Image 1 (cartoon, rainbow, N blue to C red):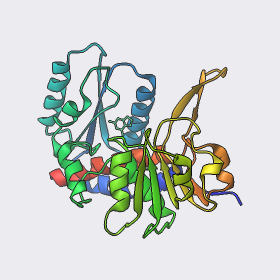
Image 2 (image 1 turned 30 degrees about the horizontal axis):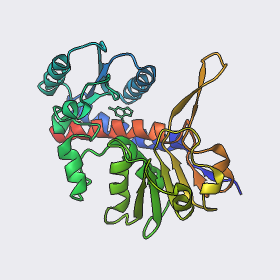
Image 3 (image 1 turned 135 degrees about the horizontal axis):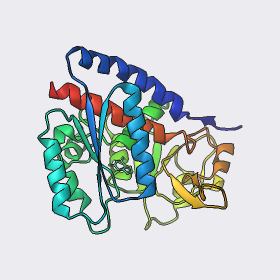
Length: 289
Ligand code: GUN
């Protein structure tokens, strides 16, 4: 039987509808939420993501400010840009798009952002709270989006075996914490490039979260029939099309023939990540009042 499709577009529309009400309440108080996005350099994928974030802001009545910085900029200039946004009372959320140019320290930049405006949830203070079991603050957007997706699909994770493939600061690590937190209670394994026999690990899993950035890595024979598979990957694969590339996930589409549920790429985790960014921006604005 074919897997249930976990439609991130539909789920994110519902989240956005809830956010519109909260934005209207803020507007009544004379406050327009504002998200500032800093983009350094000309990574084409980053520009696509940032445009999608701007469109989401426009849909919700959130003001968006975009600061384009050339790739050869001095580190100190990025520092000054972030500090200026920190002290601007009209800016409620700050995001520095990743990846930064080679050699620019992302963690240093992230930790300069005022934690109250850290809508990516990557600041040490916000990640630290998460490790302490406090999920009431600004959570990293992609992992939070995945959790919403599992909730919307009514997946009970208690005692279930979850494998997170990838140990990144942005997705894999915070994802593993959210899945294992009290009240969610999955038993989590983090798999990575040094993991032995990943296929066997995955075959034992009830839930697989693939966040590794390798096109179609998770194949049908890695997946136990009926398990839930969430595909976080967005991989550009060059082809002869007009665009010159197409997008693939980390999960081979044939997994849909065995999984109980599967999130598509595109239209799965991507829209949920943006919805969570909008949610963090609204929440940050509310907390700042
Ligand atoms: N690049 C890819 N995903 C993200 C994200 O969630 N936040 C930021 N800042 N950069 C990204």
